Image (cartoon, rainbow, N blue to C red):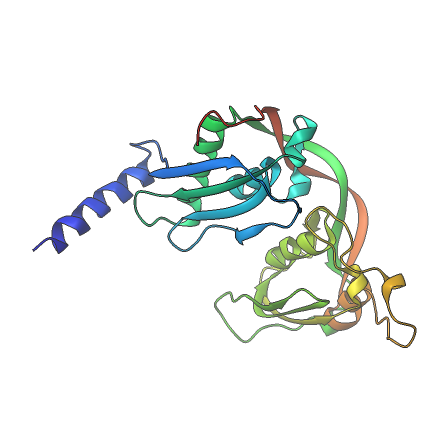
Amino acid sequence: MSFWPIISVSFVLSAALATGQVSPNFDAASLKRSDSQTSAIGGFVGFRSTGRVTLRNVTLRDLICLAYDVPRYKVAGGPNWVEVARYDLEAKPPMPVGAAEAGKMLQNLLAERFKLRVHNEERTAFTYRLAIADRSKIHISTNTSEGSFRRMGGGELKGDAISMSRLARTLEGIIGAPVLDDTHLMGLYDFDLRWADEMAVDDSGVPLRRSDDLAPDEPRGVSLFTALRSEAGLKLSPGKGKITMTIIDQATRIPDTN
């Protein structure tokens, strides 16, 4: 007999969140300084399917990236400690929510605990432009619905029915710099790229593996730039471009409460 009232309450709360009638906040949240002696991040990186957050040993910059759905290189400003001090976070929404709603809840939590204030600002920065190099090597997908990348990382990128704008966003994470889609292609495409692992970088742009680390008898392979041109008919050209940055205006180092 209690099933329908629960559904009704959930529907009303979900509608209220969608229309902005209530301020989206986590039902319970624990945020405290981490006692980890390493820089390794633990827990589930991102929002779980219910909107819950379980993160260990993350910086405020990491939390801003998650809350505002931006890569690290698009976050600037603030005191030095935002990249040094590390925290553990456990947060649970009042009901299952999607990533967008959970992001707003995390934004409010950061504003409450860190007194965080940010604003968006357009800046000129170093970028790469993704453009067509050889149309004959571009693989048009037979699928009509956008798909996803099945393999990412370790010098491999494979996916079917991918838009060029999505490819550009994915390449940003790999090379650690803004990638602007200049292909003017609006369809869906299949990709199967392999390149030498020395091109892989982490979120801060530090190479995960350098060519000097390879054993003498281990093949170095081609670079990501060469793989894009030879296997996908695309090229990355360095230059300058306008990107939207998330600027930290204010942040207090120690959260007020747990």
